[in-house]
Length: 218
Image (cartoon, rainbow, N blue to C red):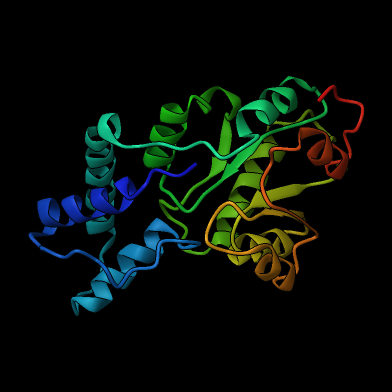
């Protein structure tokens, strides 16, 4: 999902609200980044050391600011997402989780704004983890904890649109289906080592075949 700059603006507003910093953070690359790492980069730019209390205070404000901006923000669901998720969520063989560089509160705002929140109960978020691989580990651990005793996944796939997602998938022993819906091209995603690459998720049948679920009605 693309929130068209609302996430960046919520950072700008929260920085001024919490720390009194007027900073357009134009030097920050959000694509593939995580909120905690972004905050650390901003603090380094200001020559300050981030404390746990400041981190908690800022992230609380960040959620408030994005909630305030969300009603007026443009929101784009990438092709195929709205069609694919209900199919996966309804299949008892599948457990869906979120792996995101957002903190949990802002991730849930975005999912709700996109009408997708009902498909995800578990996930990994950037409230305490700055590295995307650690976020992926957190999500996988929570999904495994929700399984019946002794059960495990036959396969784990991470779907993402950056080389960072590819690296995170492989770091946890998962396969990566990369989609070129962000700033990374299909060539760049292949070069990063993605197991499968698609331009987007619009071809539901193709996605289901890749995930090993060709029997689901597309």
